[in-house]
Image (cartoon, rainbow, N blue to C red; front, side, top):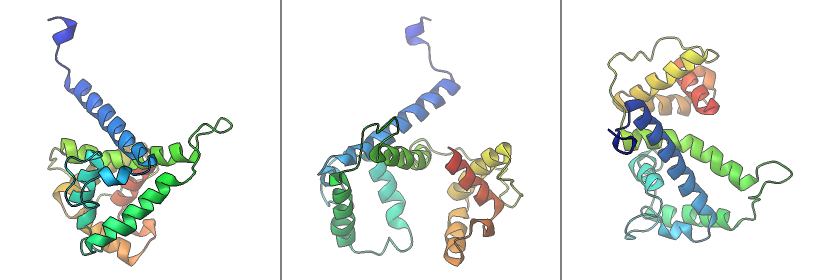
Length: 196
């Protein structure tokens, strides 16, 4: 076989998927700096638009965010006017985009931070999460131990997709905003998201 038609190894395929997901997520978020971008988004901001200009974000929003308690029952006008208008105002805001005095501008910093948070659920949604039968959400995870943080993230991901961790997370968040009151697997997951 020549180099041109050598298939990718599983590790190379995984790395390529990560790179492409990161780039697409960042690009879709960055595109909102252009006024009027929200008008090309699709549901729930427009009823019949056609293919979304932000397919990754639109998929996450329609599959997950609009189904969350408190958001699943809002009127369509909430999305079409209030949220769409807020996004439009942010796109028109005079946020610095350049490198000011050797530091990233506000717009680039926000786009980078938001894409870092969103790319993980995007990867899970687009690529799936292989089921691992040996998850243990009740084990104690040390959020200061990098191995526990990584394992906690994997376990939390499994428990959110195949278990009821997401419901437990919302129930506990309704009781308290103190992260230390959550299970240690949630604390490890939080640490993973913050560090990544």
